[in-house]
Image (cartoon, rainbow over all chains, first blue to last red; front, side, top):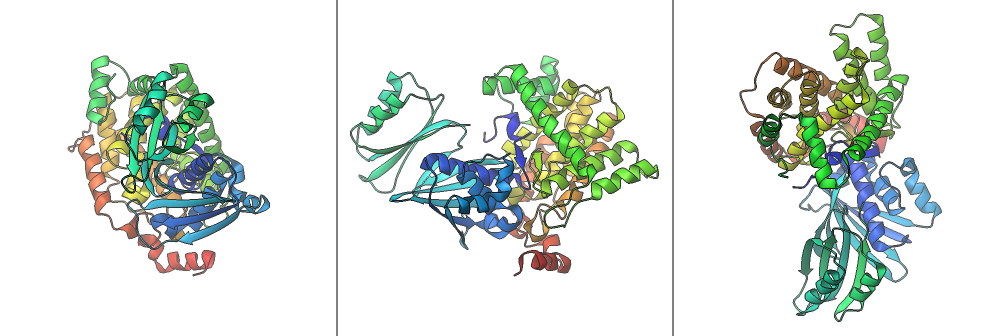
Length: 221
Length: 292
């Protein structure tokens, strides 16, 4: 089931005008910011479908930028997010995409800071709820509601078992897990949603596991 | 504990356990979230307080940044005070509070999505109209009203959609109106089965409603459709409380709504390209606001 909590229906408390195009966009921006881990100096925002057609009216661009700046859905600073981004030295490019994606409310955020970059694609499924559907072009499916680990690793036998063994050691339960890759034997992405938070030492242990290239930790709501 | 995923399951559970739908929703939320019943009641109370602010703020008079909407809740309030209203005060206040909430939303003010921002006026509209009529209504009763509405909304969200971009306005104002109708029935002493009939009747009357916002803004016709959703909820609740039953069961109405949404062209699903958005006046307003 996509919706589990009554507060997905009676909520969120938010700044208008649209739960899917404003609040959902704030969440996509905020989750991308959490994944990136720091304030980017440039973001290219690609908008698709209904997001592309109506972003000016729904303040979708303003909301995405608000999220990138770290504002939550009920933050009254959102209305001025574009000005705040400029003041903080964040360059924003809005790119309207003609091609259709599988969901009408899709945004792809390409975040840059120096040599670091990250691509996050999110969809807004209604009532302010979102799903992330790709990271750096790897298909994923996470809601951002739960604590999650995104582990980029060499696609070879044993790596998944090594990583999950560390979580077992720490008695952390896995709520949802997904592995995706672009090509056999190249870099793959393990997405692990956890039922609780984990200690930094555990993250470090996973990071030092043979075959693991990069780990991103996402703190849930 | 089995999580309900249909209105039939929800009603059967309420009948078997001799509980209200609100209480079943609270129990399930405790189970799913791991918080206590007091915690989830308090979280809902916080949402109720936000709704109350939005329902009264617009009556004081607000205008959106585009100027397309605003000041109509104030007009309704003055009309009610004149005593010349055609329908009863309950309906007139439901309209005023629904419009107020959506005017605040359009002005980028703070609201609580129920189930979405574009449809945020319907459920609070009828709830605060009930409070207006019966000042003795307690905060606990009002919070429970929201849990009842939320239980029905969860079923719609999981089996169809609550997004205008996916399912049209029937998925937003339609869902909100049906949720409000069910909650009205429970608050006024109806059985769980009567709640389901009210829900079904309200949603049936909203089937096929398209999402065609002028210039893509959640303003025209959204604000006034919230008033219609609130009145429709009162109509359906009164019919169900009178013992009138829906021929088509609630779950089948939800499925019909979902299938109608799937066949709706994208121009009528929150793209601002069809319907009222594509009228000469709709096009002109868009041109004036955003240029080409």
